Image 1 (tube, one colour):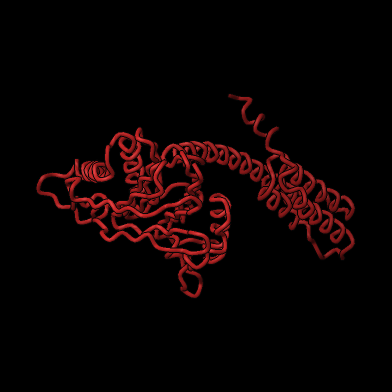
Image 2: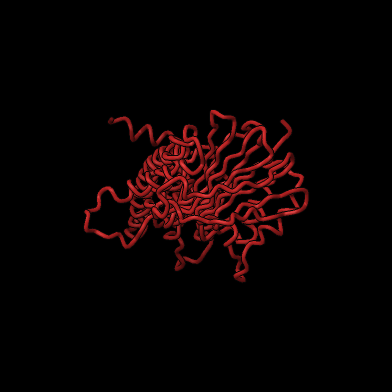
Length: 373
């Protein structure tokens, strides 16, 4: 353990990190040294040398900071020797101050580097956890080619309240879920993880979409209310809008249940139509329907070459600086011939350009193209 600070010191100099910035403290040292030597005796610029290690610590490691501190001290000694005032109390005090500040800057650099390593480890764990919760969708499922994009509103976050998932069934179909959990922050992440887990556990074995919808609603309500007393009322209810789909392999249709979620868009050639269900049920978690017979499954054509787009309201409600919503349906025909992955890449760039790089809400999009069997 005693050798660890020295190990950190040896590893802290990363000259390739920002080599062009080294010119700034070096130029400052040279300029102060030359000007102070050539200036009249009543002008003293030596105290400015303290800026060299202070600037270096902002972009370099401890070794580079120590080097700049040593050069600054050497420059101050050179100035004092050339001007014949090296032994004066003023110059000695300036040299001592330079040494102290340089040592403090090196110590700060070591502490910062240790904190950066800790933050990197925490981020690595968070990325693994987020990738487990929001697993990437398969690129191919039966006759379907699938792609997905998740755009978090919060920087450094890969999972928020929006979610999507897919599962294969034993009777030859692909089931998909897209949803948007109410709220934000850790509470939304927790509810999103609950809904994803319930879907993955049951999507492949529930015989019908209505039974799957009942299962998701019951699991969501049970987890949200299991710790509340019988007389307690939750005024801040948890729920999630969602769309459940079942796409058979050998039938050119898509079966759909809508639970308060924005309707999918169907791109056929250059024509965009809204796959609007006649009945939109209550969101998952509100417990409005407790029997599979209460859920209406609607069926829509989904032919070879068609592209189905599932999305959350973070896409259609994204506003630019003038308050204009993103024209999602109007932009899609431009990319009608693209592969789902390419389409979503163009959509992501266009959406971020519309909002100038900052989303006010999480956004998720899933693109599904039916290919020939």
